[in-house]
Image 1 (cartoon, rainbow, N blue to C red):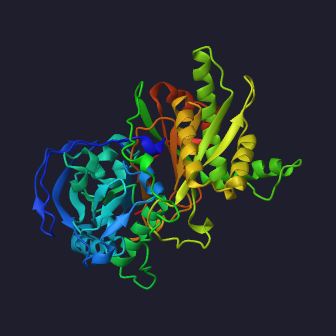
Image 2 (cartoon, one colour; image 1 turned 60 degrees about the vertical axis):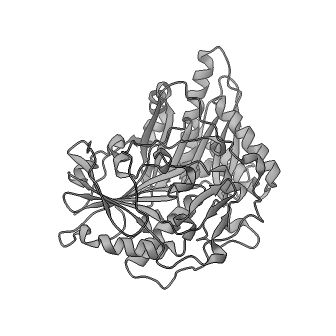
Image 3 (cartoon, rainbow, N blue to C red; image 1 turned 45 degrees about the vertical axis):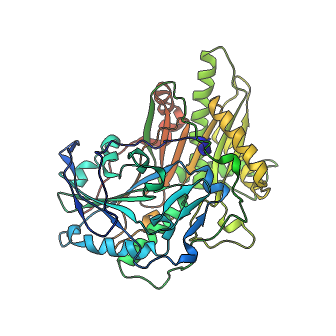
Length: 475
């Protein structure tokens, strides 16, 4: 599914601009976008190049099969930072640019340009760096977060600009300065070069360089993965825009850490009963994903009933990081798409109850079988089946960055007070991330509008999650 969809992430309109690919600020004024309290206004746009030129022998980066599958997607994130009374983030602008330039010498393909479905030219043309002023208080902006306005804190996807693919930046950064001195850093990064793990490592390294921590820098994060996952000609130009039959709704759910712990203990006790293999027990991710999956099944079942049909099976496809599972293991910091989807399957009769423990067992079973790694041709068939199940509303696609190091992106101002994921328009999907305390889980759920209300009113969701609560910032 994800390998053949175009423009899944919503693009915001932007006036046509010409960016000078040098470290020279191109100042411009655009029509401001109204937000809940005031305005978001672009101050400047420029391109940041690697601080050292990329050597000639590294000028071509070959895309693997897994990179090809996501070559038409950009991933949007926003990191929010709270200032104390002694900080003025606007004075740190030059430091951010310099540290970004140094970081790009390690992640140099991000400063290049897309050539075709098989490679990137690492030509040091640079990444887009935007600065913006937000005329409101960040603490009020986040009480509760306005997910529509949030999009204005993220750089426009390069797909939305009227540029040839070979001219689009592969990474865009937008630094948003709030009127009270707080800051939010929005990024839009090409999925063809980076999965969730690679993005978190890139942000963490940029932050470390910015605050002067250089001891643990890994110099070989760019690896050639084409021998492990050879590119495939069948993936060339196979990008189909989803045929959406109705409006898609994007919502944020907050799963409190204490409730997750209580449910996890209950589920693990039930798993221990009987003959089930308890070598693997429920994790925080498994419990929350199973709650979401169960609510998705209930919605899908009701949709089938409405057309005098029945739902006999449902699948959850979720991501599995392969870096530590390769032989030998790959370095954790390496860029690229080093993951695959795993399928958990649920078969049911018309009146079967949908219980969290049963679903957790299915997820554990899928995890236990993850060692049966498919070859690349088998995986292409697997992804085709995944797409067909999605089109028939018989699956949930779940992407998770839970347990990754997004909240360790400390630029010298402290850790982020909140991480937001940009909105998406792919129905029957969910993205999971950690809460700031590392104990809870935030879920970003995408459904057709007519299904979202039913999903939110599911008893399991209502018992364990709250809808878009405010972000409280301690000063």
